[in-house]
Length: 254
Image (tube, rainbow, N blue to C red; front, top):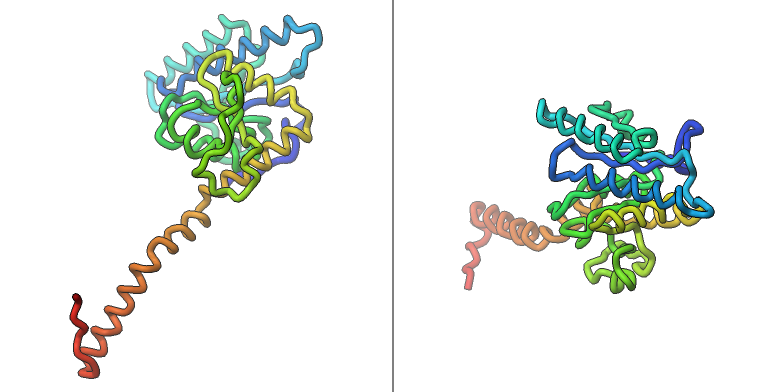
């Protein structure tokens, strides 16, 4: 599992957002860079900037081969073209211990893949205490970031998801969902301009939501689902033993 580190930013550095995923085209890292660039540009134009000037975007991923390496080079070039190469870091093929450190000290975790079936990295963000900023589609939208703030919507997200099983006050959002550059930029700004109390409150709710997908929760649900079948099997086995011993004739099934 991953551990949460209190506060955002460790070892005296400024706050940062983290993105975790292989450098594959469907992960759409370019969307993250464009949103980050827009958020930074909006802050430069603001009369009173709300985001710390030393805030950073840390993109963590692995390269499977030459194609991924070329894609990574293109992303670095994009960051430079957008004028944010001084606030974007690429961490490639990092060891697990370093990944835990990066997750644990992040203010938020960014996910931009369209229609991802589930989205385990989003759950990992939440379990680590990072506020999730995920794509408003498929698994993250339907099952994980529930309920959510949708910067692109005019009026929130329409209320709690009826499938929520966290037991928490589902009226309080656990993260953000977006699809566009503007939506992601607004979500990034929202997290980085939060007070520490506001961020920790949302991160705590997100971590509680992530528990729904824990091994403990899965085991409990599996046992509950299988209990009737296992009980029936136990009775059948008992009857078979008694029948073999001549104590009881086998029950007839109607």
